[in-house]
Length: 171
Image 1 (tube, rainbow, N blue to C red):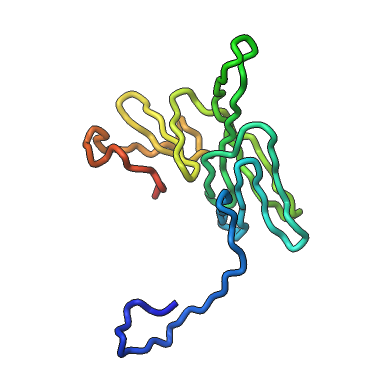
Image 2: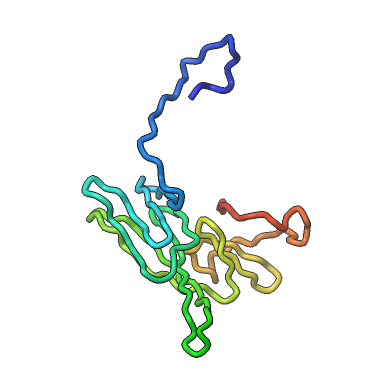
């Protein structure tokens, strides 16, 4: 990749050369956690590539949703859509939140964190928000929603703020 800040007559010795070694399928996302581990996420599978092959978590019902890397772990929600036995209509259960860590034993350790609260809104990259009183609080999926929320002090009624998306929290 050439340096875009040099003119046509200038030459830069700062040239970055790279070779693409892998192209991910369109339905696969990747997330790198702080220890360098890369988690790959598909709708029904989370996996890590190792020298010994792939280590994975698979589910048969529902899907992995709203996933993101925070610290040394991948956080995600699982939503399960169930059929009501009486009416045969679909009913959506609240999401359950999980944490995945790739251990030194070369396994993905999955831990249940908690269920989604009724007033909780989910965002991409494993962020959540809820309204308490007159304040809106935003926090990571693995945080305690009662203690760890960061208050958002913006007026959400402004037209220019209606379609904003949360992409991070700086503490």
